[in-house]
Image (tube, rainbow, N blue to C red; front, top):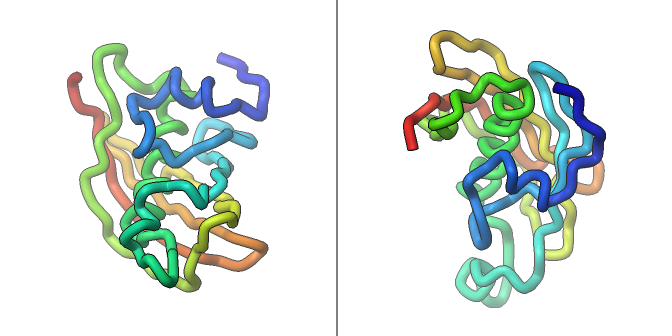
Length: 147
């Protein structure tokens, strides 16, 4: 199937089951059969910043990894590789390196690519850049799961 990019948040929601407050992709900038570039604004109003941390709000690392995993799931969805009664479930993190803090008001540029795919199991690598600097590098896995 051919898509016109960018795909905005409403379009992203047609592919992913995630909704607020757990949807971390605002738009898909470009994608092909094995990779994707997406972005999201780290909103100053997100409830997470009430506790992480009140005097020094920073995006939790686990949520940055979740954003990369959602981008990976979108690759599978866009390529038509997802069975109709399934979703992509995050199954593990092999490696993650946090290189800089991400603060409210910044835009995360999220990149992911499929490294391997076999029988519904996927290995991905991804990274997130903010203001031209690398914030996160991650390798992760996912699989198709029935709804």
